[in-house]
Length: 486
Image (cartoon, rainbow, N blue to C red):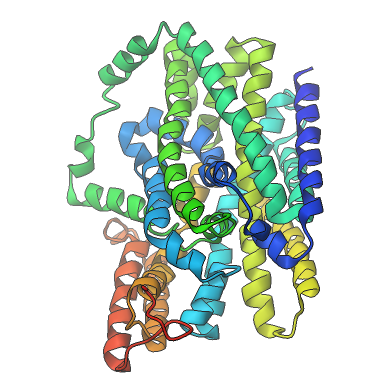
């Protein structure tokens, strides 16, 4: 019965996405929803940017293992990223009326930088989307009492998300996400209320966490190596996620500039607050069934720790509560998966394919975008099926390349009128080269504790930009002759 009810919910979600697809008449409609989305929808989409498998399943296990220290990258870093993007980047980028973030790099620098950084952005999504596909496989496996293997669950989940994303693009993502966010908020709050009652109230849960030393941040400064690890984790998510198409896409779909700024900023704030709900819910599991949680949480970084919340619901709650929880969980994953599936696909079609076929018209761009969605779905599903990384590991690895290669060119291009093509090229070259060398060296045991490759790549990229500006001489201007930070 549980699986049947969840299946009905999936069919309804697909139907909503297909209805929204009727609004797609051009590539711009497909990529930016015609820039017509209201505040409520933009806020819901921004909130859903990272409120996915990592937030509900990965962060819960991380907090149970590492306390507050396990949350430094997500939700803290992720939420800060969204607020920074809204307050600093949304207004100038929205005014440029771009289709993708790659278009900015072409206009501000040149096609070579556009191509390289667009490829970096696409590659960064492999781990992130694969994490959502992995989570879908886990959910379908548990819902079917393991009748459906996790591998086939991944294939099924990927197919559902592909269906409505393929046809409706950003319109389908926007409308389904808005509906799914209502289900997420209502569902998780209801399940948390039930679990809280079973755990004898908030005071009991908080007291248990305090006694277990989960709020102790002293470990963050225990040694310089620990400090570097936490700083790297925070920077990777908070800064490395800024030059990302999914964040930009949500901003760029806004109905006006005010919505772009405040929908994104408030979305980041709401994300941090509501991300605490599944973390609290997971800790109630420790109070309700400590043996089960201890067994799963201490299973290392592997899959068992990701099963804490689903196991709590399946083992201790009614069928109605199970339907509500798994409906909310599927909404969480699908809303994130659809947006992050569309983002790299349109980046590839607009900034990579179009670089080789510049005469592509609007209809051809729309066709290529949809074809790329299919190919990328197959690629990330294959990656999810073959990778032994956990959901948490996939997400953590995702933004290293964009922190090292794309963050400095974006910041300098938006806010520094002297940033030029040479500075952009050296920033990309220095940053990516340093990061790649660091990723190689990190596997050498004698120096592995000294390396956070993406952070060194970030500093090398900044040095490259400064050097390029110093050598380049005259100040660079944005298209139309106005300063980049005007």
